[in-house]
Amino acid sequence: MTLEIISAHEITFKGEAVSVTLPGELGSFTVLKNHAALISVLVKGQVKYTTPTGEEKSLDIEGGIADVNNNKISVCIY
Image (tube, rainbow, N blue to C red; front, side, top):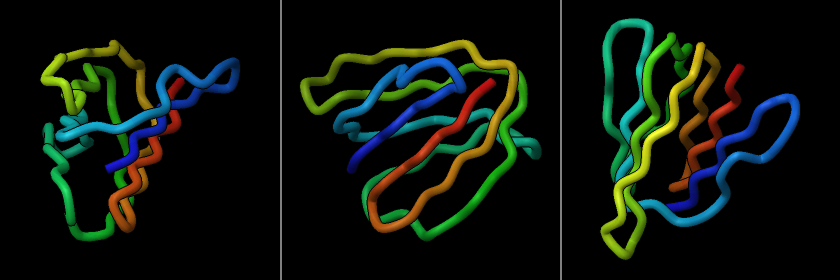
């Protein structure tokens, strides 16, 4: 699936991911391939994702919005 993490200043990451864990307003949640469509408010925490090569990465955020649809995850952070 495709993950895109963007802020007002830059594209932080754009590429393929196997799993993505996001700090949702009601708690952290993980998105895997073929996840149901959703939109979520994100709170202060970490966006964690695993690349197809198995590399695990994380990014501290202050908050944002995540949109999941058709194996594309768009994360707008601030």
